[in-house]
Length: 198
Image (tube, one colour):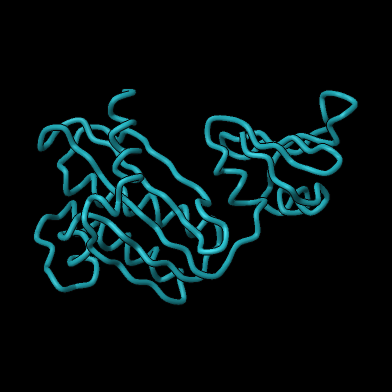
């Protein structure tokens, strides 16, 4: 349950601008409550608490970001195709881990799962309003296809590459680098945890 040290009035303005459902608090200590996606925001005098199934839905609205972020992503498939999941992490040079996530995504190939993980981290970075992103993943295929070094013959992967390029156009600058699995450990762990919990 993230606790955000911020002015509750500023948080409410940002939530109102995002068309969140804001209501009065449930107790005398709560100033107000808001619902954004699958997150609930509760404001007290000097802090805001975010709860719910997807806290990132609210954090992306409330917290002010910008600048550069590092995005780690990993897709996993047990079988090829088989049950699949994604894991991703956003790391800001000044703030450390900004957000992370892992989720199952149905049955698909490993390469498709890697693309789905890339899309998940890009969508999160766009939601948070970062200006620049340095992507790191352990799929050489995804890294080289996104940069255009390799062609994409598979229609499903081609479609995801197009979507990735659309999301990348939201940034002032971006890069994608193939890294060893050890460098991508947290994203890998999140994807595998999602599969273990399914």
